[in-house]
Image (cartoon, rainbow, N blue to C red; front, side, top):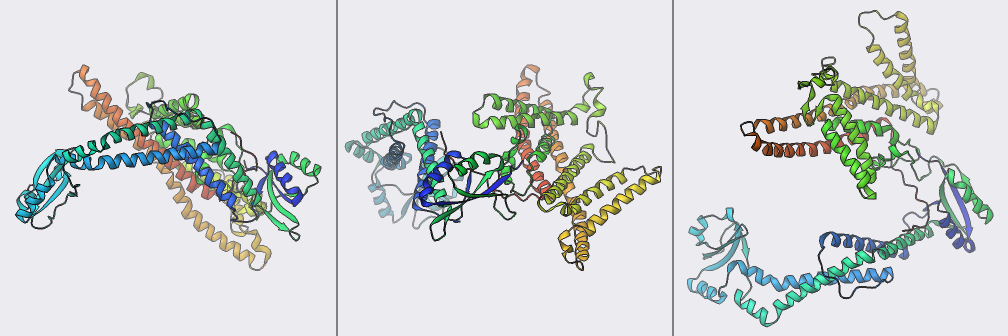
Amino acid sequence: MIEKMKKLTFLVTDKEYDSFIASLRELGVVHVQQLQKGATSQQLQDGMALEQRYKSALQALEIYTKTYTELPVPQNMPESTSPESLLRHIEELQAQEQSLLHTIDALQKDIRLLEPWGNFDPAGVKRLADASARQIHFYRCGNKSFRKEWADTYFATVVNEQDKSTYFITFSEETPDIQAEEIFLPAGSLNGIIAESKANGIIAESKAEEEKLAAVRAELLYINANLRSELETGLVKAQNDISLSRVHLSDERVAGDVLRLMVGWVRADKTEALVEYLEKDRIYYEMEDPAYEDDVPVQITNGSYTRLFEPILRMYSLPNYHDIDPSLFFAPFFMLFFGLCLGDGGYGLLVLLGGLYLAYKGADNVKSYGRLGIWLGLATTVCGLLTGTVFGIDLTKQDWAILAPVKPYFINDNGIGPIFGYSPMMVFSVIIGFVQVLLGMVLKACKAWKNYGFGYAIGTFSWIVALLTLVAYMCLPADGSTPAYVQYVIMGILGISTVGIFLYNNPSAYKNPVTGPLLNIGGGVWATYGMATGLLGDLLSYIRLFALGLTGGVLGGVFNSLALDLTSSMPWFVRWLPMVLILLAGHGITFALSMISAFVHPMRLTFVEFFKNADFEGGGKEYTPFREIHN
């Protein structure tokens, strides 16, 4: 449900301004509208930069915690200090870490380059090249990429094979045409560089640098474990400063710069305390309902069940203030679509168990996803049992006595059998799609009624009535036994619907009595063409529910057959292991692919077919009242 909003216009003097802003912040119910579009200030930019620095530091500390566990206790543990000082210290430690990494890498680079080639005298190699009037090149390639013809053409000689790479040299009068990586080695031999490094203390220095690096990382881990709350406090303060800076940029000077004009939005059910304050402090204000052209912020409020599906809605967009919140209406369909696409009772049980674990044992930020998983798992389990598929096993083909009474009721070709010559799940998928499309059209008509008046909803309601009447007519017996008065009623309803479709689809056109009927008739013809082509395409899209559910069950059944057939000749005490491995691998792949499809395609049906027929526009801006954030 989209909460009702009230528009507030304030006029305050410079003398009242600071106390007024402080009071608004304390009340925490007013969404301040930015009148100066795109306005900024140095204070706002600095605040946003500081916020990003805090976020980067906190994220880096999380990464350190997950990456490094066994490190020495830091010798000089930082004491609790101001958040900004602590932030600067963390950034200094990160800069020090990068410097140490570069130093260690530079110290070891030459040695790493020379190690695969062994110890040789570069001066001797140069003398050999000069004496033979040939060039000597050093190359590396994969073991399988080395070609024997290089030895004939360029006297390629393999020096070493290491880490699946072949290191070789060539002797030629000109640069060889070889598909391999040429290595440019430093001057000096391997033993010489190592000896020089020891003499200069570089090897020891490298070890010392690594110890320093470990100490830096240990200090960062200590900060995350003991002082993280101070960083989070600094982040909250930065965010509060940003919101305050934005409010300072949200007024306009009027009356010769004597007064400040501000516009805000408040939920209609949150006005009492605000009005009491404004009256008490004698702040001039006007409160009114939003005009249609106003950019009204949106807050949606739903029950515990519907709220679980709000993240899916937000992936598309928040509704705007003039939309009807579709969360309640698409949530049951999304759950059903997920169950039909995954389509296996066993897989549904896995989703259900995973959801239960996350809901009761997971972190606070994933508990809601766990509860959503419970609903989706339940839907999948029920759909899988109704269609007779559990872990790829077709229950209608099993000779189990317990299944004998219910086999005729499974919704598949071996259960209730074809409907109108088609697979029953294909027919049910189209019926479900028709119901959702009609629901979308009802929402479209209600939206037009809400925003413009009932007259603007007549055309859409006429289409809904006409489609339902046509379905009823098609369900009448074909043997002519239907009473005549029933047919007359149906024809009468269709006639009335036709009038609404062709003569009242655009009431505003009747402002001109001459062209109004013609424009409505033209609009009705165009709507009929769109309905004839669009409705068919929309309904055919829902067949994917049947196709995806069928595919998952078939793949699961294929892996079941492979596990049985490939191990049939093995003794039972050996057979179980490869059978379990095949089943785990096969069903793991099938489950992963089916899960992706079960999320993507229901979203596609919701965002395209349902939202289009519901005339859902989206583009809403979230209602964010000006208030102080706390840890």
